Image (tube, rainbow, N blue to C red; front, side, top):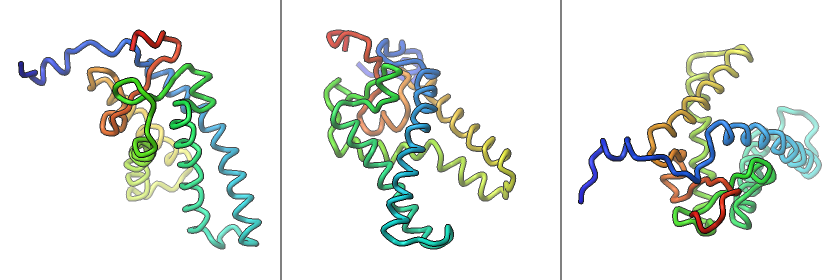
Length: 178
C-alpha cells in the first residue's frame, strides 16, 4: 500500500518523542556545559601554541573547537545516548530502531546538526548585521524556525535526525514501549 503526502502529514506523533520545548531547554543547558568545553579547549590551545594575542592563531583555534565539541557529543551519544543535559531532561538519542547509535551516525548527526546555526549565521553575515542584538535575534529566529520544522514530520523529529537514522526519545518511557 502506498502512502500519500496527506497520510504522512496527518500521522500521529511518536509518543516517545519529547516535546520540542524540552529539547530546546536541554539545548540551553547544553550551551552552559559547552561553555566549559570551549574554555578548557581554548586554555589548552593557548598553552600549547603559546598564544599571546587573541587574533593570533584564530583558524587553528576554531578548527580545534569544532573538533572538541564534536568529540564531546559523539562520545556521549555513542556510549549511552545522553549528555549530562540530556540526562537531566530525560532525553535519549537512539537509532531509528531504538538501539544504540553507531559512531558513524553520531558523527553524521553532529555535522548535520550545524543546520541549526549555519543558515542563520549566513543570513546575519550577508545582511551586514553588526549589532550584537540583531545578530543574536537572527540566530534565535533561525533556531526557532528549525525547531518549528518538527511540526512537519510525523514523528516530530528534527530533520538531521531523520537523515541520520536517529531519533530522540523520552528516556522515562519503559524500553518495551519502543
